[in-house]
Length: 124
Image (tube, rainbow, N blue to C red; front, side):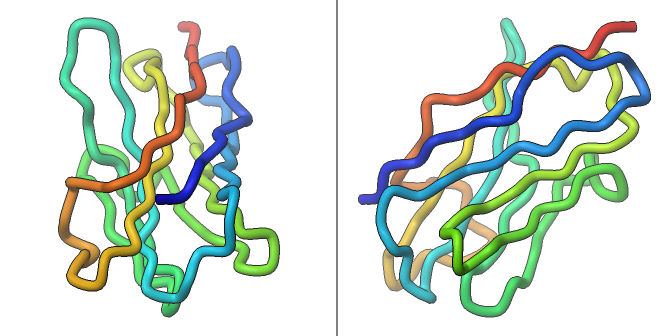
């Protein structure tokens, strides 16, 4: 498993933007899939987006499609989540996830490694 460290959370006004970063502790091989999730108080953890290290193919939840963008920087071993047009309902703890198992594909949500999360608060 790889250790993940999220950063970039904070307080932002509605309509604003934030970019979250997720740094991996070790070199992730090309087979890795990386993902972003969030969990609001009293709610279940929600998938947001995922990306393959090797090809950069992405997948998004309908709730964030068009507003959030996932990307990766292989040289920095870092994955990003650019969040635009933020709404108060985007307030949550945001988690980065990674999985390098051979059969793990972009459509799966049962990631093997998780970060500790970063708080995002959107004020109205």
